[in-house]
Length: 73
Image (cartoon, rainbow, N blue to C red):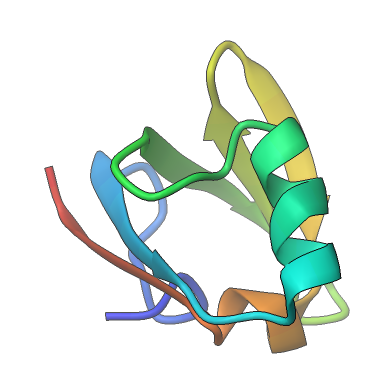
C-alpha cells in the first residue's frame, strides 16, 4: 500500500521511495528511508498527512505520499 492509503496509527515499514533523487535525499535526511518504521498519525485538509518517524513528525503532501510504499510492521 502507499502512505496515502495507510490507516492512521498503524505501525508500518517503508518498502520503497519512488521519488526523484533530490527529493529522495531530502526525505532520507528527515529519516524516511527504506526499512524504517513509521506511522501516519494525522490527516491534513489538503490530503497530506503527518507521519511519525524516528521520534519526530513530518508533514508530507499527498502527491509524495502516493509514491511511498509501505507494509504493516
